[in-house]
Length: 313
Ligand code: NAD
Image 1 (cartoon, rainbow, N blue to C red):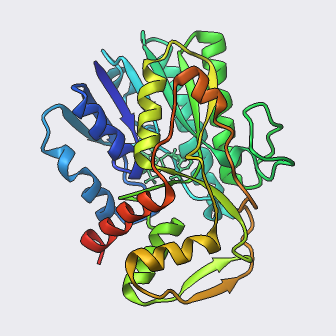
Image 2 (cartoon, rainbow, N blue to C red):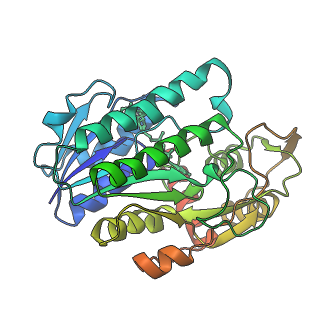
Image 3 (cartoon, protein in one colour):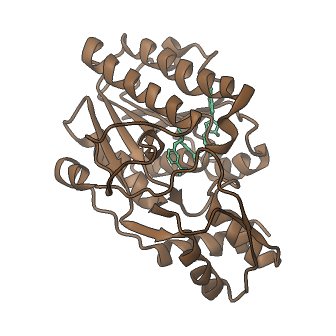
């Protein structure tokens, strides 16, 4: 099968491209190396893929690429390209989010109307929920994002739905809950905590540290994409969590134990846009996609810290 992965140089897109190639598919990856974090990290992500002749890489923005040409003969689209990050999405930079996350998605979906795709999988986010009244978060909950980033991801999710409803583009949206593991983005908490442990530098925790997150290990996220692509379901939205809900302050001792280093913590005020808690109800994904997350926080953190130690110090 022929697959298109947008955002292929990123944390999740590079893992997904590798898995698709491993499964025998031909993959075209597109990424414009948006400067949210340094290009050198993304070049590292692509190192193995660039050597594989089942993988073709195109350095271009989905906002500019000739998408009709790019989509010719493609069976599956995995749309991960986006400007990530909640805290940077306020102020004038919101335009980066509206352009890449909303207009980019609309442009891609529009081009997909003319293609006989088997599936279009969109990388949505738990940030579409905001602070819900009750936990765990269900796909049917009222959606009220509390960050401009969340608004942009929700707008694109709605676009994915309406291109299915009106033009039968076979979309599925996966709402990821905080993804972790090797290659994690350098702005994300576990990466920062791990690096701080190994370099004896203090970490900053925003708020009390009592906020909880449902963390999903990268291999479970990738498996969810494969299941979504293979399923007969269309026009649906799924929570993809890891079943690993934990307080940030409980993560520190685990990292200290694995790294054998003491971490010093500085508390900072709560950041606007950060949800208090995230926790996925994954019963819909379990039932319709046979999704079954396998990797625990501890096991996943061991893998991520090992990667930081070997590749980021
Ligand atoms: P990432 O920043 O590592 O990867 C995104 C990639 O998209 C980047 O390499 C960037 O250069 C590329 N990109 C952005 N705009 C583009 C454009 N217009 N054209 C081509 N490429 C473009 O981020 P990630 O953590 O791997 O996230 C991947 C996807 O998953 C994103 O859509 C993100 O919103 C979503 N998501 C991530 C998480 C998480 O925990 N990492 C959680 C929820 C949702």
